[in-house]
Image (cartoon, rainbow, N blue to C red; front, side, top):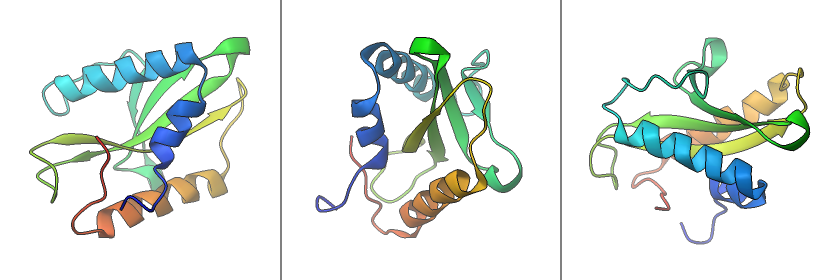
Length: 124
């Protein structure tokens, strides 16, 4: 929906240039690997618990700040041509800190909204 925001794209635009390049390289490598076969050396992690089904692209930026992209893997979803990596949103945090449950709830709300749409809202 062109009238809606694109949280993942907005987050990437906001990130420092080096962080944006790192995250783009990570998701590109994941997207080009066979599904579920990317070994990301800590840069790509499957999430657990309430976040099961989500994946996290991870990098560190200036002053050791941590940047995360929250993604879903899509398989043959309407509007997508085969398996796809879908960036839902991103967040950053100071080193050695944690996101709050409210932060994760926001990610899940956006993911749920994405899944409910038919056709799915996508920006390439």
